[in-house]
Amino acid sequence: MKYLATKYSGSFVVHIPNEGKRTRFEQFKLKKMGVVAGMPDVMIFDPRGGFSGLAIELKAGYNKPTENQKKCLRELENRNWKVFWSKSIDEVLEKIDNYMQNV
Image (tube, rainbow, N blue to C red):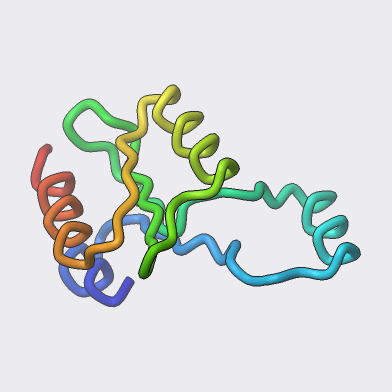
């Protein structure tokens, strides 16, 4: 997020804080509030190269996207978003730069 704020300060970028374990009550409450399980970690709401935005799911170690995360990425892709998931910060920064420079 710091990279995006520094290099692309005029962009509308958000981190979706969906991670973490929740109690059943917290899950219930968040669902009632409209929180969607599986939303990507980073969303860039700037249209580029014919896409509506860029959605990024970040993973570490041996982790891979969950079924909910895969579903959200597919839903966004179906709505003309460019989406990807990655374990590599270098890959993430390269894809962000490629996307943001594709006006």
